[in-house]
Length: 462
Ligand code: UTP
Image (cartoon, rainbow, N blue to C red; front, side):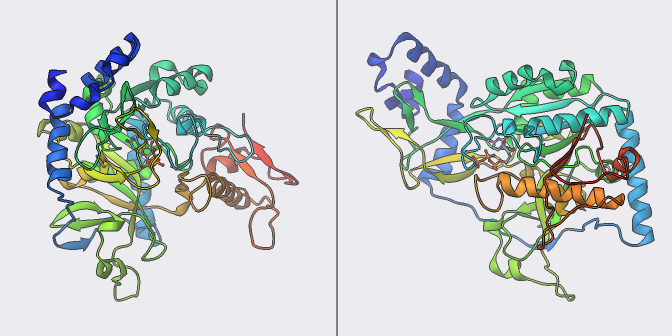
């Protein structure tokens, strides 16, 4: 109680006398979990001083390793691929997925990773990622540990989901769950919002919380014990990442980079993705909303966009670099975002606001990029990116399933199998290839019966 008073948050005990023992315990537990000093700093900097910081500085495009076209570029990619494969064979690379978000836009009442996305099988996002990791560890005959970041909102359900599904065939010792921190949501005066009489409204501290949580949870120590040196970072809601892509691993290692990024050429100036650039001499991701109109539309002499390197949240992160970021006091900024936060009023009545009434704070993982000494930016194709964000529309289950079908159609056609298509060029049938059947087009070519006829939805699996 005294702690709450000293931070001006005593209202959280407004209903104390009405609470049952469990409610009281829960509230005190939450108080222990919330970093009050940090919250006071964030409130002073962002709510009371109203200092929404926009980026300022000198921006230049980042050098990009483009898609290989010339013979020399193809040779370089092959060399990188060999370096990456050797690192994978030596067990130096772990996979890490961030799955702690609340998935509010999707409106799915379970962890987003449990969402069924296989266009034919209905397999969950988690299962598709798990099968890729299993297939990779078989291919490279080496364990590939998988670190899964959850949050207070979904940790237990995520663990249960894995248990119920027998870890999708992965060894239990290869999967490491760790939880990110939670922060309180505050109202316009900087007071913690309550979403029940015995509960402060909290939310995960953003995907940048990964770096803090790696240290706090012991995951970083676990990596060292396993002699893991590099982390392959991706997001749970994209079913298409080429997890542990050897070429990306290889370019990152060859450059002795601290943290690297995969990017897509932006479709057009207004595509809403952050861009990788060089800001005041340092690699950085400039958020879409922070890019000036002038930079957004700027073109090069060939007419292409000057700032075209769209970030797709796939990174390689060096384990020692994470430690360094922690050792220098974790200088990543917290970003305030105004949100609609359900809250109770002084009478205890719950409100569902229809416009933003509160602020949440989030860390972004790409804010570690300016701290790197070296960073690689590598281009990939859209075949690697189809995030599931909303229930309907552009980044939805429908578009992700269509992107999966389209990728598998191109693999099948690549080995000479006829894929029936509709007039607008889309595959007539849903197609799905389990990573356990083929991780890529080359593996498919070795395994598939070339006389296969497609006359309905197709699933190739084990
Ligand atoms: P998004 O920023 O798209 O958020 O996360 P979200 O939680 O999935 O969905 P909305 O915004 O509530 O609708 C991108 C990725 O980062 C992870 C998410 O789980 C997703 O894989 N993430 C996000 C975290 O792990 N923790 C966070 O605090 C935020």
